[in-house]
Amino acid sequence: MKKFITLAKKLYPINRSITGKGVVKTLKIIKASHLPKLKIKKIKSGTSVYDWKIPPEWNIKNAFIKDESGKKIIDYKKNNLHIVSYSKKINKYVDKKELNKHLFSIPKKPKAIPYVTSYYKTFWGFCLAHQERKKIKGKKFFVHINSNFNNKGFLSYGELYLKGKSSKEILITTYVCHPSMANDEVSGPVVATFVAKYFKNLKNKYSLRFIFIPETIGAIAYIHKHYKKLKKNIIASYCLSCIGDDRSYSIILSKYGSALSDSTALEALKKLKIKYKKYSFLHRGSDERQFNSPGVEIPMTVISRTKFGNYPEYHTSLDNFEVVTEKGLKGGFKVVKKIIDLFQNKIIPVSTVVCEPMLSKRKLYPTTSTLRKNQIHQNEKNILHFMSYSDGKNDLERISTLINLPINKVTKIFKFLIKRNLISEL
Ligand code: ZN
Image (cartoon, rainbow, N blue to C red; front, side, top):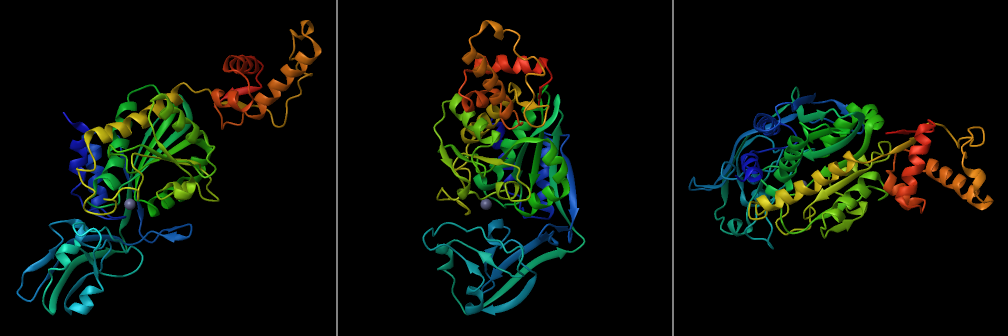
């Protein structure tokens, strides 16, 4: 059975936005079909979150445009991309000039309905394929949008926490706010769901947290609500976006490109012998923008198949199941699973002392009497090198590279120091 695509096709038709029933329906399907312990949580509209405010909850029942003959020339019920997300209520006749100010199409992609939003500016609008727009005739049009803004509504999100042996955790985030598009929407939640499902019954070394949030405002709200806990526990975090096409593999590194999440993702791709494209943080676009931002500084790496913006169907109705396939989704799953698998065996040492330890006081060289003086010196140096990089940001492999010492020697130092309580494991 094609299990990934089955869930993707269930989620695809839902009209999602940053708030509203579509988000909740999406989360309920994931919960009912695969992750019964997924918690669906909500934050009130109007809540201040850093520089932002949770917008009113937006829902829409119907939207269409009729021409003079009464024929529907655009019908939201045929494709939810036809409506600009967060369009206001309207019920009136407009002339063609007025109508054109509210229509969106892409002349260079005549068959594609574009994806347009207007979350924070009161507006109404429709999107359509350019080839359909050219067919529009007449002078007068009847526009109907039956939408609703609820100031007492909520922004909803989903969260699943899998407790591991360590309270330190790996965060996987994905978004649930785009309407009917396959790669830039449902691929992320689908892959995250199957990764969570795979690990939920295993004894994991690190705790795993999966969040399904509306992009940008959801991430900001989530960080605002959980900042201290996130800062304390997260050792690596990933954003899954556009992870279901079978064209390529991509990674966007965290802000400085040197986080444990970056090196582990690169290690996974290398071990899987996968060719990939590596992008710097300057190519960011999803919730890594918020997690890596000043004041938050939780390094987040993006895992994608073909990166957002880099495929021709992006943000249009052409982003469908010709773009996203079972094979594509499984490829995305394989990479994320491998990353978490690697963490299961990682040893991340943390110094138990502040500043350098006083080595002489601790008699750390019991065998050194047999060594020559320069070797003694080098052993001491290696210990201090090891301690310097034992800041919870590196595993043994990375320390081995950083201090130019073979992994077997690094492992020996680790065992030596842990016995003497100078190091603990994250
Ligand atoms: Zn997008």
